Length: 186
Image (cartoon, rainbow, N blue to C red; front, side, top):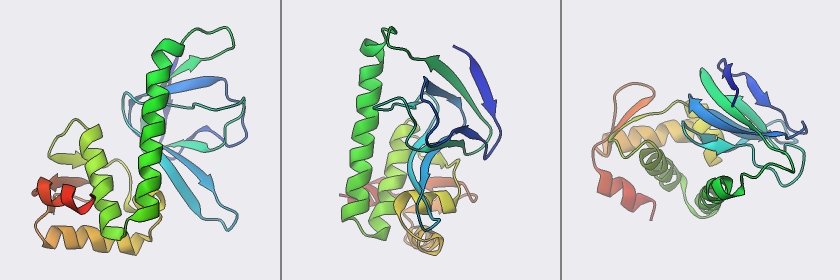
C-alpha cells in the first residue's frame, strides 16, 4: 500500500475525479466536503487515524477530500477483480452508521446539542480519553454541524462556563462532566 503525505489544506481527491482507490488515514485528519451552489462549504465527515474513506457507489468521487493538517494516507487500489469485500464491508458500514448519526444530529438537534454530540463522537473515536485534541478549526466544526462560527464559539464558551468542559488551548478540550455532556445529546 503506497503512502502519501499531504500538507494542511491540500487536496487528496476532488469532486468528479475518478475513484480508483480507498484511503486509510495513517496520521492526521481528513475532511470530506462539498461546495454548495451559494459558495458555502458543507463538511460531511472527518476521518481520523485508522479510518477508511473514499467509498463510492460508482467510479467518480462525489465530494472533495482535503487534509486538515499534516496528514499521511495509505491508498488501496480497488478494481473489479480486487477481493477486499470481507475486510472493507465492516468499514463501509461503520462509515454509513456514522453518516446516519450525523444526519440525525443536523436534523433534530439545537446548537448546544450538536456541539455536545460532536464532542461525544470525537471522544469515542479518540479512544475515550478525557482530553480531546481537535485537529479541526472552529470553522470546520461549524461547517460540519451546519452552524455559524459565532454559534460554535458561543456554545464552547457556555460549556466551559457551566464546567462541562475545560478549554486547555484552542484545540485541546478536556471533558470535566462526561455525564452532563452525554445527556445534552440524548
